[in-house]
Length: 198
Image (cartoon, rainbow, N blue to C red):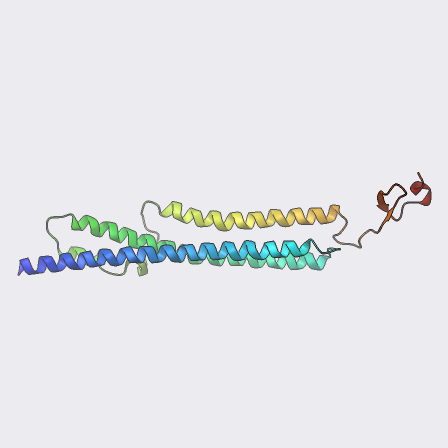
C-alpha cells in the first residue's frame, strides 16, 4: 500500500510544482500589463496635452483649473494602478513561498500527504499578509518608483509650463501686443513713439 501511495503523492506534488510555475508566470504577465499600460496611458496622454498646449495663444486660469483636475485624476490613476499591482505582487510571492517550501519537502526521502497538504492549495488567494520571501521588497519598490517618479515628473513639467507661461505673459491675463521697430526688433506696443524712434 505504501509503495502505491508514495508515487501517487510524488506525482501530485510534481503536478502542483508545474501549476505553481504557471501561476507565477501568469502573475508576472499581469504585473507587466498594469505597469506598461499605466506608463503608456500616463505619458502618452500628457504628451498629447502638452503638445496641444504649445498652440494656445493665451493661458487662462480655466486652463490651470483643467490641468489641476487632470493632475488629481492622474494621481488617482497612479494610486489605483499601484494598488492593483501590489495585489498581484503579493499573490505572486505567496505562490513563490509555497513553491519553495514544496521543493524543500520533495528533497526528503519520504513524503507525507499531511506535510504536503498546506502547499497543495491555491497559495495566491490565501490571506497571509506580505510574504517573507527574498525579492518581494525589491519587486514592490519597482512599482513605487514607477508611479511615484511619474507623478513627480508630471508636477515638475506642470511647474515649468506655469513658470514659462507667466514669464511669457500668457498666463492669467491678456497677451501683450507687440510692434516692430524700424530696425526689425519687436517691442511692446505701449512704448512711446519717442522710444521707438531711437
